[in-house]
Image 1 (cartoon, rainbow, N blue to C red):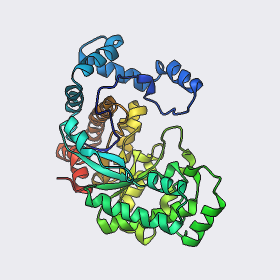
Image 2 (image 1 turned 90 degrees about the horizontal axis):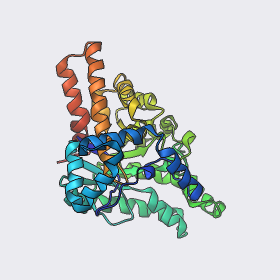
Image 3 (image 1 turned 45 degrees about the vertical axis):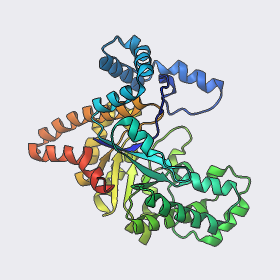
Length: 364
């Protein structure tokens, strides 16, 4: 498969600490103690450890130690073994637009193509911290996006759901953006200047459309920094009705879980919207087949993409993709029971796991 949404993983050996694979990113010793104490009762960690033990041919209790011993001897070989086992043939990697591109390093380690995807929010944060005006922020984002495409990026991404939410006001203008900068100087930067962020979002969609690059939106649940009520994909309705929102190719990532059926509705009714399943297959793996089937029950198969949202350690990429493969087996059986022709089911598998990604992101 082509994993269409990944984050960076270590380029050199790093030990595997399963308790750090969590949505609980709260800081402090109490949070660290909580992560350690709850790790044994988390189903996804139990399943990951068991899958790892099967790959290594050892008892589950020995899986992490055995992994570390083998990975320390040959990190490149270990990473490639994981990705080969998960049948990952390429990855689209999230990179902050204000940092140097480094996908070549990851491609060399992984032994397969890695394409860059530029995330715009860190640049906005940086400029707000530096005291830039609204016009300067908008112009800088546009310039950075153009440069990212010139450097080979295949997509853009926003995590505005983690900042001021998906309820983007299409009417936000430079005057309102500048007023918000002056009025909110004491607000934490990630929550600052909603009118400015709304204006940036609309302009960024226009640039993405002009540059012919899709735009991923974080939707649905995420780590403990997110405000879940502000990540409902239905909040994007007014933005999607604008000329910019109608022109750009919009990918609602993470299946918008727990609003995956709403995302499927957008993908079914709007000509420029796709829904992508990732993240929930990592942290709620057992329900993946049910969610994927619910999406396919409504959305055209051509509008559905798959990813892991792997991050931190290559085992997360591997596990996320393995979960999707297992879930597909259940989905295929359900489709067969519903009367779908075997050829249609196989065509759907090919589209979901690789074909749609190649088309949406124009991959070689």
